[in-house]
Image (cartoon, rainbow, N blue to C red; front, side, top):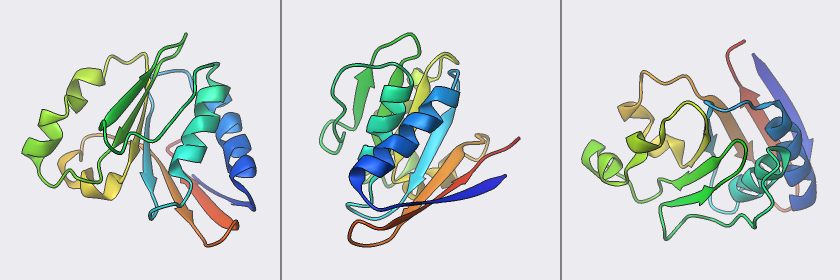
Length: 140
């Protein structure tokens, strides 16, 4: 199923993320596609809030993964610098799949070729300035 949303600020993007987060139960993989500054981390901030996570959410650009504990934990990956299966494996990515957490992956296009067995919720964010088109694709 595909749904398309439009936001005109980071706050609206976070609010949409919060609505999505409230629907998640754990075990989901979120795959983001979108350029630098598209709003992937803003969306993740909202998802965390929707999951009931209270701590601040920041971009995992330099750490590769940020962990946010909660009743349903959130693991937020940045795959911008991941170019091979070996790189992906060295992040510890596969160790995070316990079926209870939500995993959000920025720069999905860099790793999707290595993860064919997964059926993620794909969120594509495009636009410029404050205006964003956000397309959410998921299996029913």
